[in-house]
Image 1 (cartoon, one colour):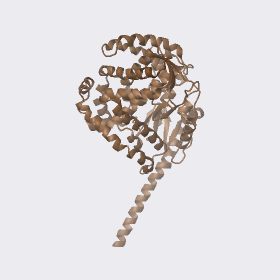
Image 2: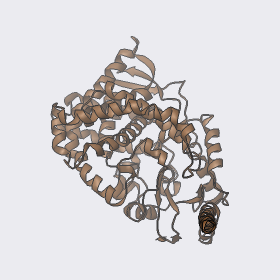
Image 3: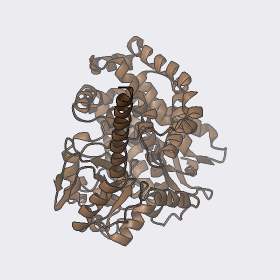
Image 4: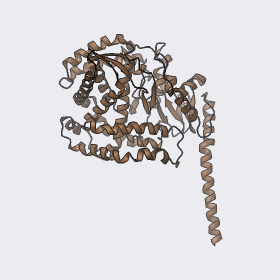
Length: 501
């Protein structure tokens, strides 16, 4: 009887081992090769699949290489930001794919197909993120289906434009503090070189602290520092294939674990402070926030909100400054507009007057296209066989929408796509894009960025006030080197020479 039990146990172990081995073989080889054959039959081109890593190793090496040297101001930024994708497009054309480990990533460049993908968010879902991403955020951007719909419905009212107008005095106060610091730094001669990148990071985090949490930036500063460190560490950790069960303790334990005791008191401070804050701004916010939005949920949303807003707005403002300083003829027009707006309103007493700042939209839109969208690519996964235009995509394929490539596509924008041309948007976005979904810096469709109005109001306020008080030009020490750490940013800062007006 004992022998029978042992034999049965060995047989069961052998069976489980065989099933596991078959699953691994199917995951790392059989399934990828099947998907590759399916894609090639439909005219899609790309490298042949390489065991487990696919194109990730080559992609990582190319990124490391381009980061080691800056580029000229007149150079195309695509080879530096998306080196492998750019090379693949040159070799294989627009209808191409790459291997993100054992999963093929199909690039979609047709605006009509982009529209279909972004409008059907229950068919094209967010990819299952690497578990390490949860160290950065685990909020609305990572949710899907009913959970996403529920959270979106709860949060939406707080970001309506009519609600955001109550935050404009806080925006104004934060901008005034930054401008005052800059004025104190400028020499008696009226000019000084300054790296505006850290200043704009501080501004965006201060605005979020004031408007969303009622706390001063000095208390929230540590959160941003920790998130900046975690962003770098997370990108390093996920640059390779994630193998379920593989230990990453050696990579992360020394960096993340010691941060948790430092972050938790800050989260507790923010959470406990929310219902008790009695200033006027928070009194208005309490009427906006849905009571169903429990503080435990808020705790998980904080990192996502801080990360997305701070990264996007500060990056955008710094690139507006850097790009705009190359086109000095646009500043007199902008300064004439903002001088009247800023001098007659503080944006708190007369919102209708303050809305004239929206006239900056055309210049800001073209700078967003010329510079770069903060999120340079969007990815979606399909979990059942799907028809997309003329393509039949099998389950497990990643659909990628390269925002930056679409924003720089000559076939869509014309031969002057690389040129600074604010008139491009003079008749509205629809006219400029020929009614196509080819301009979506905040995504598009049901999952459009919930904070886009917040971000644009803050950015317009900051740019307007800077133009009111300073003119500027690129410093000789400025190094043009956009790169990615979760989102896009200037690798060596944004050095400008500020001059008092």
